[in-house]
Amino acid sequence: MVQKIGGFRRKTRQKLSKPRRSKGKISVKKFFQTFEEKDKVVLNAEPAVQKGMYFPRFHGKIGIIKKKIGKCYKLLIKDGKKEKTLIVHPIHLKKIKV
Image 1 (cartoon, helix red, strand yellow):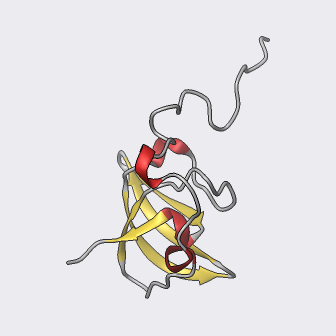
Image 2: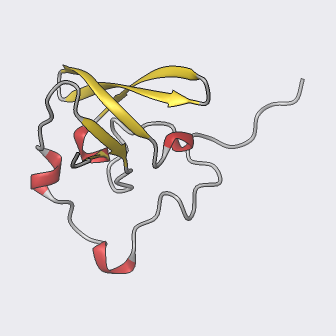
């Protein structure tokens, strides 16, 4: 068998890059933001923080918060017809106003 070439962030140059004006220190407010159960959030990666980051395939997907696990949140997303659970740090989440 042939070995897989590339890692977790392969082919994500555009997806996981920041706009020029937003480069620099990360927002402390965004780092410590809290969510309630059943809140709807968008997966929006913060490239400067790799801990608690989801797989880049799910970038831009909408998920529902299920519960808090330590500093991170467990959320449910739909990937095609399947429902998947992800554990994501709050810096990579953005709340949707409904």
